[in-house]
Image (cartoon, rainbow, N blue to C red; front, side, top):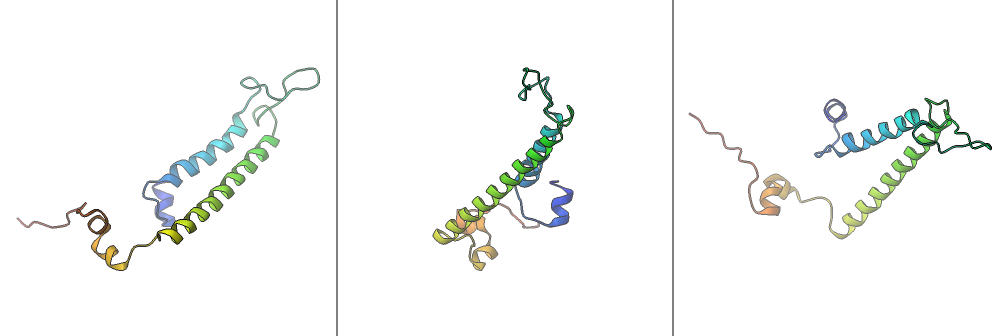
Amino acid sequence: MVAAVKARLGYDDSLDAFGVHGVGGTIGALLTGVFATKLVNPIFKDGQGSALAVGVIDGNYHQMLNQMVGIAMAIALAVVGTYIILRVVDFVLGVRVSAEHEEQGLDVTQHGEEGYYWEVSLP
């Protein structure tokens, strides 16, 4: 995800947070619905107290729907929360730098030092 898909889609994620945590968390949440078993966590019980199926391995396919609803809720919360935070920061501070600062490089204009030296020395 962080190498092939990011390059193909061309999105900007310098820390690979979406590829690692977003995709990894989504796959993990889905697979929890598959691999959850009554042997590990007998959470569902019938009237006699016997453990019922928990995940897909036990035969409870409805758990996958529960996991998908949870994933959808997490995505919605992340999108809405991120949008609100971005709008507030944009209103208070701004989220773009000037074209001049971008041209000079943010290391110089924001931090007062050069992070990368692009000078080529010829032999």
